[in-house]
Amino acid sequence: MTPAGLAAYHARRENRSGIYSYEQRPEALPDDMEQRVRADAGAWTHFQAQPASYRRAVIWWVVSAKQAPTRERRLATLIEHCAAGKHIAQFTRPAGSTIAR
Image 1 (tube, one colour):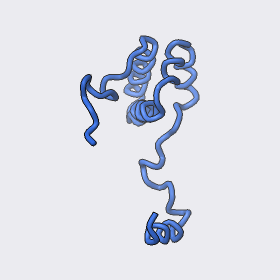
Image 2 (cartoon, helix red, strand yellow; image 1 turned 135 degrees about the vertical axis):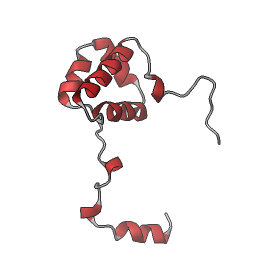
Image 3 (cartoon, one colour; image 1 turned 120 degrees about the vertical axis):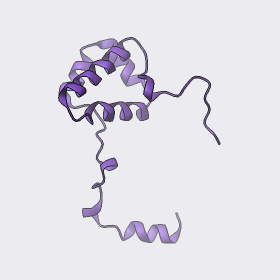
Image 4 (cartoon, one colour; image 1 turned 90 degrees about the horizontal axis):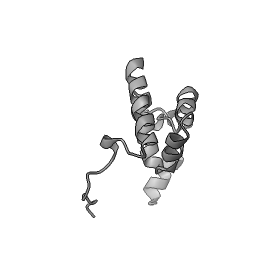
């Protein structure tokens, strides 16, 4: 890190850390939702086998829904796809795509 970056890092205020929405995203499903995924052993195994980035994105997709029926529908979609060993379509790259370097 450059000296200017280190100076900014050391000058930060603790009361200003973790206040932005992207810093507050949950790392895990809420307990009640996690128990519903765990109830299907195949779904839980598949979900846990996915990369952390996929799990975080899907968790945020489920819990960020504003209405309870939408959260329930998204959780059901997650369980259904995981039980079938599939990814949720909007969280995967199209086949044949590559990352530009």
